[in-house]
Structures are given as structure tokens and as C-alpha cells.
Length: 278
Image (tube, rainbow, N blue to C red; front, side):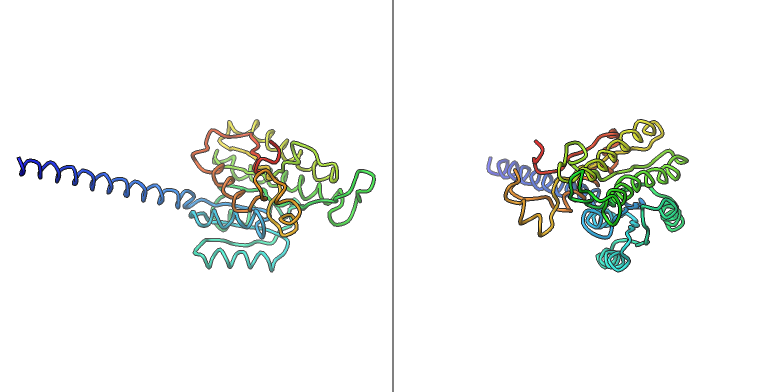
């Protein structure tokens, strides 16, 4: 009996060890799969030199993507490129002004020449616009009405237009546009910004309706307040979550939407604001 009992105990112990080993192997496999979700993929990110764009570039590169970022500020772009490379990622900075369609076309062509194609485009570049009323908003100048529309809306239109030029022939691709909670609500103190972001959501839905059948998914993300020292002091304690968002949290959503697991998602806008618009 004692020998039989010992045998059963050994058997149970062996089964437990085997189960633990299997669980460890499964966990390791899952981690490896997650770490390489975008292995070999080429990702183009506009406005990728700071904030949400830089966080998204770092996240894609960490998961194996070949990342190209653009922005107008070369010093900042090179700094972001160097930081991602130092962490072991593949990143190239190309200076471009997304307000100018020829520069967007050139950016796309340069990315294709560098990496052979483009799998994911994140149209992220944008500016705050004039925090002025309808009667006081400047029409011209930096962050005036025309500059805001050109950057936030025209830039996204050009990004979609030239992404499609590359993606349509191969019938595959993902386009993620950065909108805002102001794009589905209102912003009395900055109607120009609100209008531009409403437009981004409209472009997203229109592109998705036209091209999902072609194998190209188009979605948008609408962040609420995202971390800066000023907003942290002004808004953090008044938010439902007790704080404002982090660029890395927006980046995580962008990656999840671009991943193969989200293959049935297209044409939707995803709010990420810690419950602010609930």
C-alpha cells in the first residue's frame, strides 16, 4: 500500500510539474507572439517625433516593425530616431510637412524605396489650433484657422490618399487616424480644432466604407487630454480617472487596432479618455 501510495503521489507530483511546464511554455510562447506581432511590417507615422506619435513609433519598433517617422523639426526627429535605435528598434526619420501634398507623396515614396512597401500608416500629425472664439479666431498665421485645417484635416486626407496608392495594388493595409474627443463632441473655445477633428472622423468612415472591401482597414482613435505638465496641473484631478492620459496608452490602442486580431474592425472611432465623455 505504501509503495502504491508513493507511486500515486509521484504521479500526481509529476503531473503537476508537467502542467506547470506546459503553462510556462504557453506563457513564453504568448509573450514571444506578442513581442513580434509586427515583425517584418513597415509602419509610417506622421507627427512621429514627439507625444503620441513618438510613443507609437517606439511601441511598433519594440514589436518588430520597421518604422518611418516624419515631422517638421529635424533635431527632434533625429533624437527620436536615435532613441528607438538605441533600444534595438528599426526607425528612420524623414523630414516632411504634411500640409504639402507633394511632401506627403515624397514621404510615402521614400518609405517604399527604403522598405519595399507600407503595411500600416498612422496619420497622427496635428496641432492644437487657436484657442479663440468664432469672432476672435485668426484666419492666418501659425495655428490660425487655415493652418489648423491644413495640418489636421488636409494632412490626414493626403496621408490616406497616398497610403491607398501603395496599399490598393496589394489589397492589404491598415490606416489609423488620430482624431479627438472634440471630433464627436464640441469645443466652444476652439471651434477650428473641433471642426478639423470632426473631419478626420468623417474621412476615416468614408475611406473605410470605400476600401474595406479592398482589404484595407481604416479606423480612428479619439484621445482626450494627454499628458503634458500644463494639462497635468490644470485637469488631472478633475478627470473621472483622477489623471489625464499617457501617450503610451494611446499607442497601445493604436497597436491593438493595427494588429491582425482586429481584422474585422474598420470604419470605427475609438474614444480613449478615461471616462471624460461618458
